Structure formats: C-alpha cells, structure tokens
Length: 255
Image 1 (cartoon, rainbow, N blue to C red):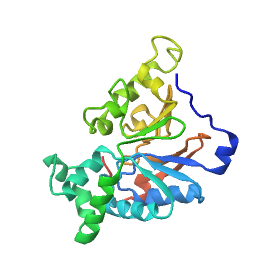
Image 2 (image 1 turned 30 degrees about the vertical axis):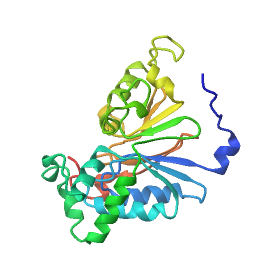
Image 3 (image 1 turned 180 degrees about the vertical axis):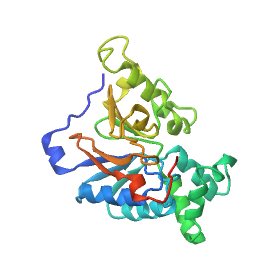
Image 4 (image 1 turned 45 degrees about the vertical axis):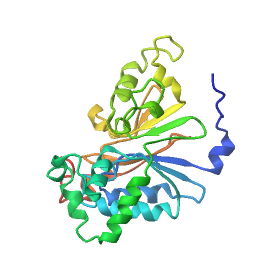
C-alpha cells in the first residue's frame, strides 16, 4: 500500500486547485467563469481538454489559454476534439468527417489567424498532457483509462481521450459496493480521486459536476445546452458560467 500525502487546511488556504471542464469554443463562458473564480497568484488551474469544436470561438479560446499560461499556473490535458484540431493544423486529418461536422466552426474561427499564430497553436496542442497525477495521487484525464495498471499502461494514448468505461463503472458501482469490498473495481483504487470530462453530465439530467465513487465528472455540457464548470478539488466548491447557449444566442453549439 502506498503512503499518500494528506491534504491539510494549511495546504488548502495557501493554494487552491481548480479543475475546469470541456470548453468547446465557448470563450465567453471561460472568461465569465475565471472572473467568478477570482484567481490568486498561488492558484493552480487544471483544464480537462476539449477546448475546441462547438461554439464559434475555438481559435480564440486557444489564444486565450496560451496567454493565460504565461500568467497563471496551468496544466492542459488533451481531449479527443483537440487531437482532431491538432491534426488539421498539422495538415494530417485523422477523421475526414471532422471538417464537415464538429470541426466546421473551428476551422472558420481560424480564418483571421496568421500562419505564425497557427504554428504557435500547433505547438501548444503538442505540449498538452494526456493525463496528470498530482502530489496527492489525484488523476486528471479527459476521458478515462482502460488499462488495469493505470493510464501509463495504455497501449494507445488516444484511449485516454475517448474512454467512457471508467465513468460507467463508477456510476454503476456507486452506493452499491463498499470501497473495501473485494468486488470494488481495482482501477478506481489506483488513485485517491479521478477527475474527468468527455461525458456530459446532461446525459444524466444534471448540469452540475457529478461524483460517483471517487470519480468526478466535470463536463457539464458547455458544448451543448449546459454550463462551463470549475471544481475546487480540495473544498469541492463548484463555480459555473451562465448557460452557454445564452452567451451565444445566435448559435447552436454542438446541437
């Protein structure tokens, strides 16, 4: 059994860690949410991926995140939609349907961007992490993982951006099996807590972050009819934007 560090009240008071869910091109929601957080110098922000595809300001979101990275302590996790945008910027499209469907508005958002800025965005995408484990053994990943030994054992990193089985297992097991039962999923015991995006909580009729077992799902449907959310991982305080469709009244998002 590993000896995990314990979070003390002094840790919480000294530095806050906020986890932000899927943005999907909603720059207005992101700016509104960060104003509500009222960031302090010692805060850390962990973004869970899917910055693009949805509302009309995908390129502008990436530009804003690049600027924010020079001011705040940020960690950027890569999502499946980010992989598609990165491929397009690199002129190696993985999915030809992306240009016609979810990537259409993303491509349009880049029309005023110079080749130099596109190259800077491509570099930003290439530097994103597929997952992050902090000093308290908390995992942050866009989708989940399937490997029994954890995300580092995944044969394909793309699985970390697309997996939904981890959340489905957590939902199924929550409140049914005690944590110390031999039937409790061993994968969930690898980390003290796990934070994911990718699967909108709107699917479960909620526009708030959800917790099942030790898994927090912070994708509250900002790409659709929901809100953009931030979770203070220590105190579990939740902050949210307005419903994003009200911030972009003449657009449809991912609907």
